[in-house]
Amino acid sequence: MSDTTIPETSRKDWMSDQEVRWCPGCGDYSILAAVQLALPDMGVRREEVVFVSGIGCAARFPYYMNTYGMHSIHGRAPAIATGLAMARPDLHVFVVSGDGDALSIGGNHLIHALRRNVNLTILLFNNQIYGLTKGQYSPTSETGKVTKSTPFGSIEKPFNPVSVALGAEASFVARTHDMDRNHMMDTIKRAHDHQGASIVEIYQNCNVFNDGAFGQITAKSARDEMLIDLRHGEPILFGADRQRGVVLDGGGVRLAEVADVGMDAVLVHDETRPDPSIAFMLSRIATGPHEPTPVGVFRAVGRDEYGSRVNQQLAAAQEQRGPGDLHDLLRSGATWEVA
Image (tube, rainbow, N blue to C red; front, side, top):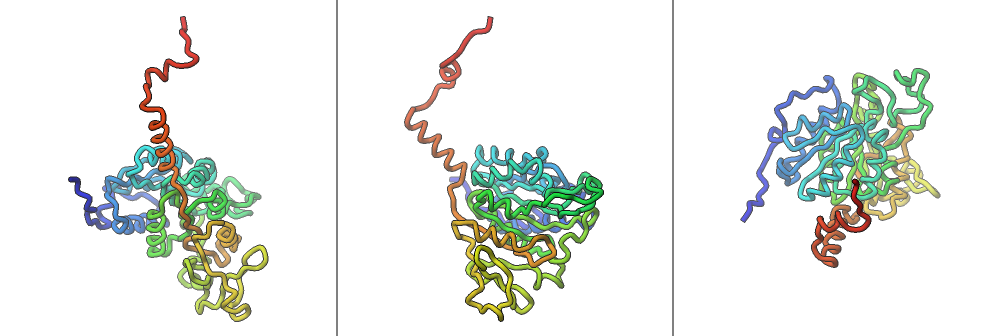
């Protein structure tokens, strides 16, 4: 009889012996601490956890975790993690990626992992810049961003990662930020507990190449007025006295003073709504991290997990046709000899 007891662990058990080598003050330190502190409460064994990363500053993450891990190739972490999750459904597979890695060269892999609902927990570190390659603009950089690769300012409209994920029909979508460790821990735990693809956008400060990008909304003095905390089943209110709220207005949502519209008009958040339309509207409230911005879980719906469905198909095919013979398969059909 195997021992199913999960050993009690602390943060120290999840820390590797590698020196953490990010720039002093980088928000990645805060995210790493939040993950290491959250894992002991997730009911998992270290030998059953894998972190897969791509390329970029965030991609060093697997080195600092006392788990299995793979520092893979640019943008391909979701593809590699998909193969792992399919072959080993008993593992807890995390994907760590930055905004450049995930949304430029890796954009196609990301949206299809979400569309398929592969059982992955994806942590997307968004600092709105390329940090590792020294400060070029990224797919989430704001229009007009002056960088080494856009000396006259970017002319492109940036991606909104939450909107992208909801557009791909992701079954779990959330946002948090590196200045609130408890919020990060709670959000990451919920993402891990979700069956299927979960994605968490984490606003992360790059203090060297894009310092203060989120300061207008994440600074402690600003949070009450600038962060809209989404809580399932509760009216969407914010402000120091919860005096402002989100209301449905025709074909969209808008911010309003509760005193002007009344509490009955304030939208009650339903993260389990099958249709992602309202969640998408919420993701579009802010045009950038200088306006009131929703954080928390936008969507959490149940959907068939990809690996389970594939394994069901394989089992059904084997039951219908019996065990196959690989030798016969390779030599069947149109075969020929080369002289």
